[in-house]
Length: 121
Image (cartoon, rainbow, N blue to C red; front, side, top):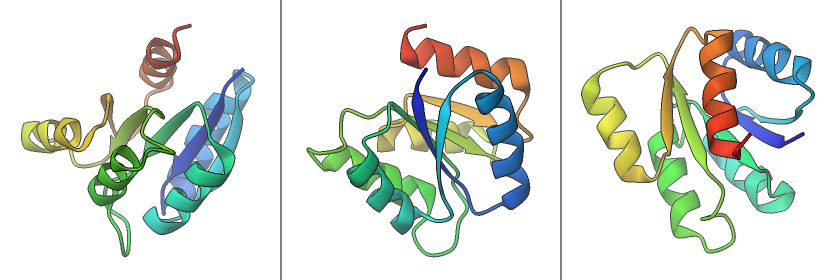
């Protein structure tokens, strides 16, 4: 299964995502903010990143843009996972390099379907 980096400052959301993905056999790496997420992406080279938008310090848009501009992490797909669910947020996420977008609260079937689509399974 895949190694997935989840970058989110909410313990509740981390727990929900962890429960779903570990139940499917995926290995999770967790980061609580954008800076820590960038470090984890560079050191762990995950297969996929699930990125929150609203976080202290560097937000998810900024972190995604930095990941996509870094040759070491540019090939790692990013799915934004956020309570922000306006069309403008989705468009802006895509412009920063995100490959997909999931609105919170995360629904199990939607999360698994989008993860499979990105990972090619």
